[in-house]
Length: 308
Ligand code: CP
Ligand code: NVA
Image 1: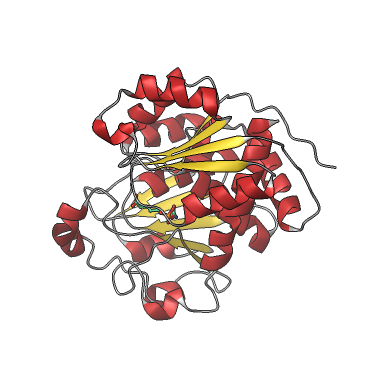
Image 2: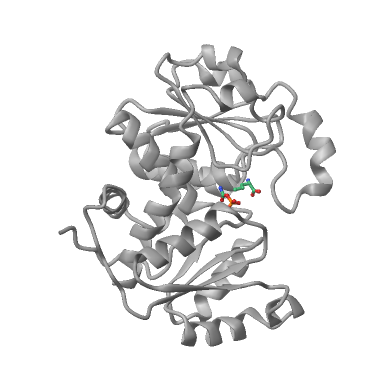
């Protein structure tokens, strides 16, 4: 029986809210859930979901994960609750944390998520903000570990916008000692505070490398990752971004420049013909749907740890 560990942090707001050991423990528990070696039943535990942005995978995988743990979830649609009418976060958080045992929140500003966490008496999980997507990164590294067993020789190249998904990947890279390269057009580099944090954590090891040419970045890589060019909330920028990202499509020519054993990841939803071509998306190097499945196992493991 694999026991949960009490995470040092009450909340999971950032990829840095777990230590290296805690991260590996969550991966191990998730693997056990996936292999059906672990049967945990929580009675009467409730997960509250607040999604200020759309979601398929995160919403459903959290709901199914909670139900597999024997608990239930409440999907608090902001447009039909008082959240959409502007009730202050500090009030919503204090009320909801009296009803629910854990909250998973998808919103725009990281500072709003932190405000929920400050006023909630129960753990708060980042289900994506503009700054980070730490649950996604946990599932990504679970998928990478399934492929390569350990992270020793992994070089992950992310081709796309240096925002939430990229930020969480580079933070996890620093935590796990994995080289993460970001290939993005000029002006779309990851958040400077995140990059400086990574440099501080890497203590002189050059684990984060930023390129403006995907061909330069991809050589020697065995994990190729991409994400949408225009994220949720950026719909009005999509025309400009479609132009700025020309040359950053993950296509078969680019894939050929990577290692032969390279795998393809995408957090989804995907826009074929923009950030990825259909043949690369559907190729036998793709692990995109394993990655999507792993969201559920990882979140089950995360909830198991946070609720125990
Ligand atoms: N990858 C991801 O978070 O997908 P959803 O937006 O569908 O939740
Ligand atoms: N960067 C994307 C990720 C979607 C899961 C977005 O924020 O829309």
